[in-house]
Amino acid sequence: MCVLVVEADAFLAIDVGLEIEAMGGRPLGPVVNVDEAIDVLDAGSVGAALVNSDVEGHVEHLIERLNGGQLPHVTHSSSGRLPFNSAAQVPHFTRPLDPRLLLQSLLCEVARRDGN
Image (tube, rainbow, N blue to C red):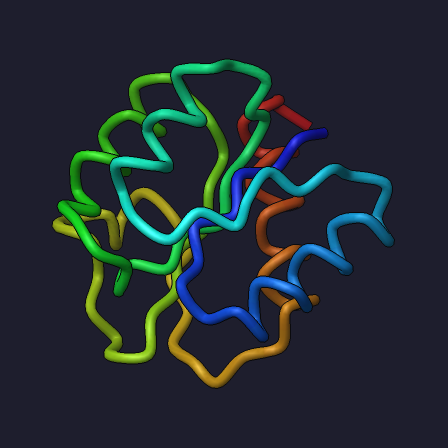
């Protein structure tokens, strides 16, 4: 599965990318702002996404696109800021965090969306 990584923190992006690969997936990115993330979505092949809600741009637009495409996703931030009212829709984590926790949560979202 191709996982869009929307992350401005280079170290976390590397850790997340390595974890995605270790789980048999393919990281797309990291992209560092909402506009780039939407460009990647438009190009296709995204199966899920990890989104840092602190990145530059209107994160709510990205979340709306992910929800509209029914793409599983998980958000996180250093500020605890939730992307608009996504609290009821997707898991949200506050940093510091373990990249494996993000990916395990994302896999649960994938299973939930697939009805498993």
